[in-house]
Every structure is written in C-alpha cells, then in structure tokens.
Image (cartoon, rainbow, N blue to C red; front, side, top):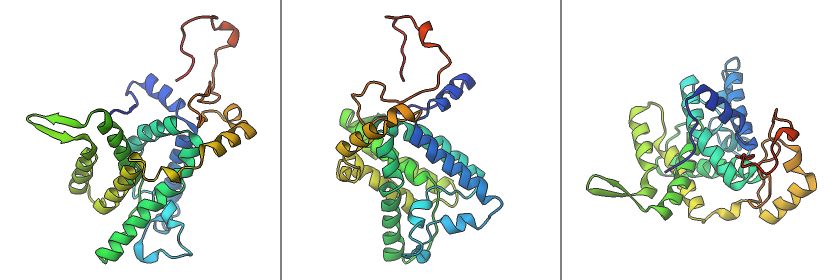
Length: 260
C-alpha cells in the first residue's frame, strides 16, 4: 500500500504539516487537546473511553469520544504518527465535509457498536478501549482494498499474499508486542474499513449534490484555508492556502506548480 508519509527532513516535515487539510487538522487538534486536558483532569480518559457496561442512552457519547482519547504520551504519539498520513490522504480524496461527517459519526460509532456486540454479547467481557488506532486500521483496510484492485497479490519469496490482508499483519503484531492493545477493537476498525472500501457502506456519506450546494452557498472553498472541496473537478479544490508570494511575482505561463 502506498500513502504519503511525511519526510523526516525538518524543512519538508514543516511544509507537510502546514499543508495538512482542514478536517485532518481539526481531528489532530482535538486528540492533542484532550490529551493535554486529561493531565490535570485524570478522570477525563475514563469518562471518554468505551467501557461496555457503562454505555447507555445517557452515555452514548462514548461511541464518539473513545477514538480521541489515549492512555499516555507514547500511545498518543504512535497513533498521531500513524493516522496523520492516512487521514490526510482520505480527506484529499473525499473532501473535508465528507471526512468530517464520517469521522464524527459512523467511522466512530460503527466500530464501537461492533466492539460492544462482540465484547459483551460473545465474550461477556468488559474491557475498555480508547485511541485513534481504530481509525488507523480502518484507513489501512480502505487502502488495502484500493491496492488489491490494482495489485491483487504481494509476492513474499515463493508465496503470494492477497494485498487486502496486509492490515491484518500489523493488527496481530501490535496485539502481541504492545501491551494493553485491543485485538477485537482493531479488527472492528478494519472491518468497517473493508466495508467502506468495498462500497457496502458508501451510502453513509452525505449526498454529494447537497454538499456541493452547501459549499457553493457558504463559499467554503474561498473562506476556509486548507478546505478540500467534495468536487474533484473544481479548480482550486484545496481551498485558500497561505502564501507569502505576491501574485504579480508569479511568471505568467510558467510551468510552476501552484497546487498540491
């Protein structure tokens, strides 16, 4: 699977961070903000975590909040490094409004509900889960399905491994090597990613016609820096990007690339 990962060169890394699209920025900001807030308010993580026997109509918000909170700094940093390029790629492909609606809604609640059904309904357990890794494996599954359509097999010596299975290997590895990781939670995230990649749950995304009308009515592409339009054919799909280059200094008819 190929996805854009930030270069370790400091200048390129800074440029990469400054070019992150809007929804990706918002999600990363919320994750970091909740971690910082959990330092003085230590019970915040407990209130946001998905704890099976504490989910009710009054605490259904846990299905949306568990992906944003983390157990500690190491847990936070690993997930931030993993999710940033995947989330940025997804938003660049689908647009800011679609990404925001999915990650604030079904991409959070569906893995959570699936986890509750398996953990409580089958194993009768009550293991709490939290962390953006559920989204990491969801997005890896989406990428794996896309890659499988182009390159169905990955050759490893004499063996041919179906490319759609590649997210399953890091899921198994992390469950064995990293303590306090949830194999079931990660598999639930990957399952939703496979369903999206195979177009079974694409109906969960808001209708593109409505999103285009909303973008045009509110002029979101012109007003919001780093906004990504849902319309791939729209010129300037990536919104207003900050620039220090005066317009008159750009040679007319040059081959300089002006967009991402």
